[in-house]
Length: 324
Ligand SMILES: [Zn+2]
View (tube, helix red, strand yellow):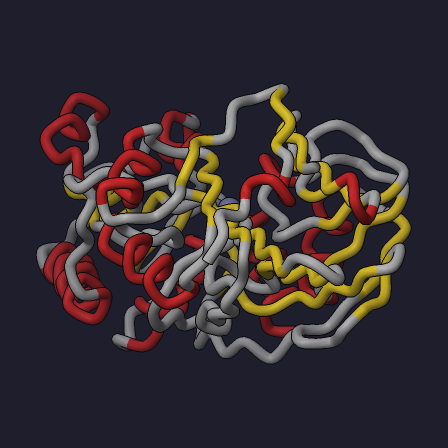
């Protein structure tokens, strides 16, 4: 039995996963706030432990490295890379009867700041489907990175002040690595800076960057999106506001928020990658989470046995596997 209730609960091995309510013990797929709570004990990669404790204070931690099997209540599990942010993992749970993968947030393809997502074949796949609608197709990452850097450089050459808005954990560090690799001076807001230092502690090379002191800066400034309207940012003359997001694809709407340009740099899969991932994992049954209900329908039209998980509902896993 698996329950979807502000997180996932796998009854067979008494394991909570990404619970948003405080639990005695919980597996955390990655350190983004919508996947964590102040649990008594967290089970996660060493990188996720460092990032989570940085944000939430000290918690009890069971650190589990990638691809290391852990015995648990008559079953075993291992964590493997999710390609989303530093330390992000998927979990593979093996019982006598079932192999189950829960993806957490994940992304296929190259990233400058974390390992690419792994693929494990399984019977039951519980997957995140944030961009699970056909209009969400991202261009090649390398091209977008080049366009982003060229846009920033042009702004600097025109004596304008490029301000890049990127989420504090994950996207901002990716933005540092991209811009620094094009030789652009990078200044970053304090929280982004502190998290970047944790990335470097785990061996991620971001290039050169410095912390924003509230005054004048050279090159590009990276801030979290909510700081856009802060007085010292609003007061910067001649600025160009740039937003990095998968939602950039909805295009024109950004103009209304005073944003000059959005680039499609996402730490999630686009629609095509979600389908490609399912093809490679080849599960007998799929449960979809966090996204468009229509994605499960799309998968059914491709011949998969797929349902959208509803909050508060339990799903019987042994009954759900169709005879092969
Ligand atoms: Zn996330």
